[in-house]
Image (cartoon, rainbow, N blue to C red; front, side, top):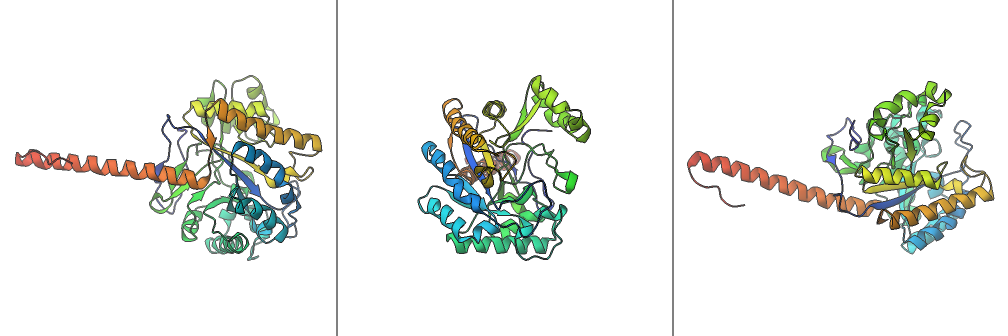
Length: 372
């Protein structure tokens, strides 16, 4: 398992890895899953459409502004159709302080044709026609609300499927951010990303779509073996015996996501250092919008925990800039940059192939090859 593995889909060829050179400054994306509030312990319900927590995003926006960060709010249907929520986010967007992407929660997104259950909460498990219809509805709702067409997508519950790339291309998207490396959501029908690494990659028909995975990886002196070891110890039996916790505390092996949700500052820095040492230059830092309203997610239940949550973000952004020499970015800039590098690489390959072909012709005819 290579760390540069990325999403493999059945509807088109993989387009190859999309890596920045090691000399490039690390780039940090902040992606906010901007969605309705619901009790994560209970089954999904179509009636859960409250989005009051969007009003609290100004707390994080102050931190982003201080660090020059332009976050991407990937919004779902309840947010895109709430005048109050739209007003909050549009005030940021109109000042150039955020980008707007799409986040599909099928159970609260029309058309309402599927049975609401765990498997159908992953958009990629729906029929291709229904997945497309729902994402088309969401896309148009975003256009009406914000006056801009989204190009970045993150599937609700990370639920990308085999039909998703074709749907994204058809609807004008360029970037997906649904992959959670080294993670299996198969217990209730979700995707298995255990073979997907942390590096971005091209995929879809002709490799025109860019996958920017959530930053997730391994620390510890067995980190290089993490993709092989963790699936064996991180399953139900291993969790019941607390094997992952024992390995993490001992410094042997630890899987971490880059997020302030349930991950402290030290662990976020530990992961960033580890990924950087392994060649990662595009980092994706994520959280859910309801976490800024205490009691709405398992990660923030009090004012004190909210303060710690915001402090973790603030201090991590400072660390990323000062210790890693990184800077903020966003999906559009990353796509444009990697696309230009891809074009340069393809042009170089084409020229080398032409030189080789001309050389063979020259040798066969006893004439030197023409210069290229």
